Length: 336
Image (cartoon, rainbow, N blue to C red; front, side, top):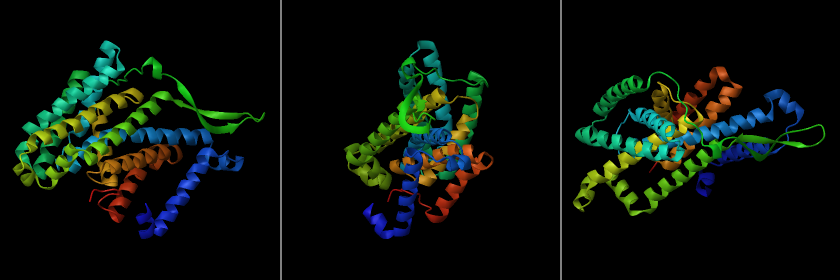
């Protein structure tokens, strides 16, 4: 942080001012003039928290994508299909057993197995051939989409939230003050907060595993020079299969998350594939912190844009991506 401030004092000042303004908007009681200009504080806080929790969902999808694409250099454009497949599996398990937790476990395992098959049957046969990988996985995503449409139909599905997560929770954030002087606090769905907290825990665990463990060192070494690593006796193909399985499994978990507080339907695979691409471009390939930052930025841009500039909300997301590509093409927190 100190090094960034020394190198970019102007940007550091802008960031500090922006953070201070945001904290004031969150914790201060808004004057009536401000509410007349940009709307009620409750609407702003709901959009802000919706963006943060949506960023948690995007992170779960994009973290698997950045493991496969950023670390292993495998162009998997069927990643969105893994998300939708995991969501459908989670819905089927939850509906048949009534267990929300079990739906995560089964979705992770089955999606990870599909990822293993993709790595062994597809990517291992065309290592380093980015164009072939791109074309083959586009074809596979179309096939997967048609198979899921055939199996599940074109209906919308939503995974039932468990009873212990149903309902809102009161947060210590004042949205308004009654005429009697009594403050009104923000109430927000508990399930979204729990899922966001779980995504934070998963992100921290992934970062620690990649940067503080021997298996993480092996993965990074295999990306940089797999021949030398193989010469030391490490079975690099097994390591890459496990990484691919983890990335695919995370997409499956994200599918269950998305099916819980949003919905599952045909077309969601393309949406989340595009979101993953944008998040990885903004955050930087191969960077778990970059994926987290990119997911948070894109989630906030989508939700705040849909509230305050709904006509141009989708433009904001791609404008952010264009600005990052123009000013820092390697991504905000790219791996060195």
